[in-house]
Length: 304
Image (cartoon, rainbow, N blue to C red):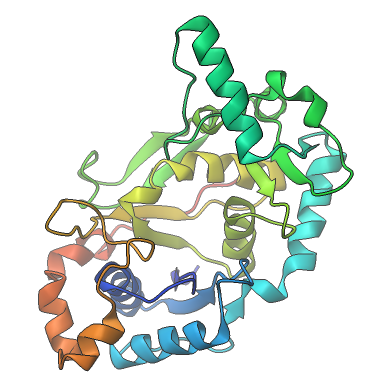
């Protein structure tokens, strides 16, 4: 199978140096392996993800010297696909409705913590695990409804040992390709479809990677833990599992990762200040060592 890589930004803000690293890694890895490089616009948030931001992203990537296959996939045009896959999970009894708000969750957890003197568990992103037992009255499919994964039932139905292939010396935990045990339970009953659209990042990303035939997912270490959840969703939906490579993150002088939400210095601003595309590689500390993971002996994707 021809190696196929992708870069999938969300146009809810401007691209920064961290995006440049990820985009260049995928583009150069595809070139080195004789593979394909695809671009996907993850714009399920149709309010914040605007056409002008998409246009700026494409212009920034072109300026970096990155070329991609056409047409570019946009998630905003695939809501019916996601809804169909969500319906399949509903039919299996693996998704349930919830009208609970963030305030409802916060109140329920805070009350429990005050009563018990204990800490409620959090997911890898730091959010409280959904307290389903305390919010059973919110399980209604009327009004503004989100759909959540029934994690307990999903693990009962899919009891196989979930693993993924982590490839590359840049993983701080594994110096070479390794089979990693997935632990989706740490995410609890995650949202599969938000109240404002029929999908979520986790659901749409695994569906689209399968649709585009992605064989290698190269993304930042901040998404390492999410791979456990994605492997479960791939298994539930009968989708193939790509090989993963979680690359280093760029941080600011305070040690925090670059982020659109924190308004990290954008590629557009750097361009306006006269920085050249070649100088971007120096700023991100580009090295051929970043591509050692794709030099030889590529592992094959594993079956769902």
